[in-house]
Image (cartoon, rainbow, N blue to C red; front, side):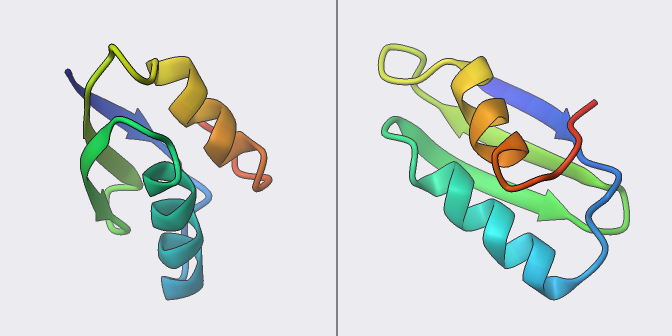
Length: 67
């Protein structure tokens, strides 16, 4: 599966590092591309292992708002 997640509160390089680490900690995530300028994350994952809601929860647990 491929999904796009909007995270408008992403502003710094530290934000990108934290978010990428949180996303990749989910089993089943294959790839993740983050655009700070767009405030968007594109994730490729195997939905047999992980659901989009799990990925969003791992980002929200860091304190970011996902649209």
